[in-house]
Amino acid sequence: MQDLLKRIIEMDEQARKIEQQAKDEKIKSEAEVEQLKEQIYNDYIVRAKDRVEKNIAVDRENADKRYAQAKQHQQDMKQEMNRLYEQNKDSWVDEIVKRALA
Image (tube, rainbow, N blue to C red):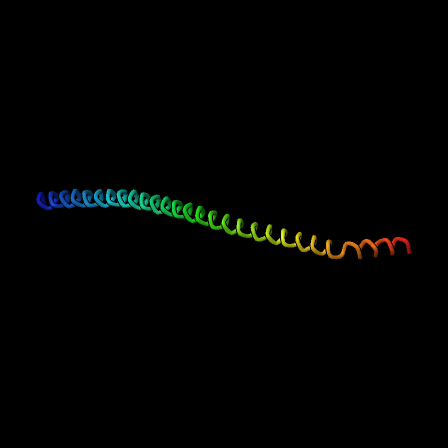
């Protein structure tokens, strides 16, 4: 009987040790998961910021190109209008005067 009681106590102690080890492992695993989660999040943020910076540079370059094209188009149109004015100014003035006096 004494041996049986001693054996039960030993088994209980062993079960408590195993339970404590399991709890310690769980806490350790949760800490590792939290650390890994934070590392993944930080890596994602760094990559996202890099992508944003690259996109900003590309967008700025595209905007500069569109601006230069629009400016060139405006200059071309201005030259065309000046050419048309020089070519037709006399006939336009005559037509305006004629319509105003009619």
